[in-house]
Length: 376
Image 1 (cartoon, helix red, strand yellow):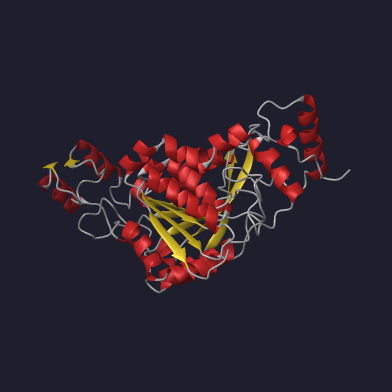
Image 2 (cartoon, rainbow, N blue to C red):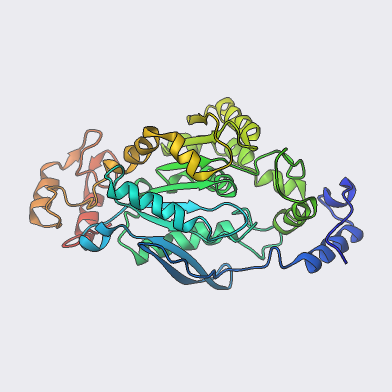
């Protein structure tokens, strides 16, 4: 048996599959299962500052791994909290980008180009598209949003609020960043959509230059979206953006979309940019001349603007939010400053820890929870 199946729309593009279509999908899964086999726990990656962690997932019903990069400042300043960048990898190999991307951030932090931050590398498997599968067997988005983020906040000294998180990804990870970030903008201060794909309106409409074989494309379509065009559309970033405009605007989340002009995914990214514009969703659109589908080349082409993106979100974020006097410890001096600012607070007032526009009991509670430590 081969992995080739009937390409006809009546089999692969029906929302109510016939017994023939169902059988075809089952045979496809059995014949080609190794390509999309579940690997909730990957092999550990060895890179400076990087370690593998494993947690028990209720949604997946098994152990799930992730990797985290810790900047040197994390261990040097045990009373400080750090913002977190969540990196969503591209297709093909869940761990291939960890060493180069962590090295890129490590060098940038060492050079003082960006502030110290944790970088969390989630496990999205090879071709699971950061999407809960149609059959419920692979709840990729649920594991990431509902489990991994809380696990990271509980395990590390993070800033566990919207302003302490950025979501970023390339290729399949860029698509996942668009989907998850636009659905849950309340979780992230910024979402960075890089060379995103697949974001065409029909997954089976392969873009010129794609290296996915037709049989693998069909296999992914079945494994993730159940060969159901309605589910594919419902989980598409375009649809999520359309249904969530009010929440995206209210969140204040900073959105950027970047792609190389020679990237085979350029056209679909341009279409998505136009879609966001039509919806009135503010975002930065960046074209990198001459750059193809390459993470390091795209990073390099972004230049100073790339540093500005991270610094604009994390640069003004106090590593110790409740440490109002910058002493490295939350103590009586900080309490005095908070009480002196009690009541209405102008925009950017440091004592307004929950960013509500007023210094009140909620801010006091945050400070007391952080007493003597970096807190939250």
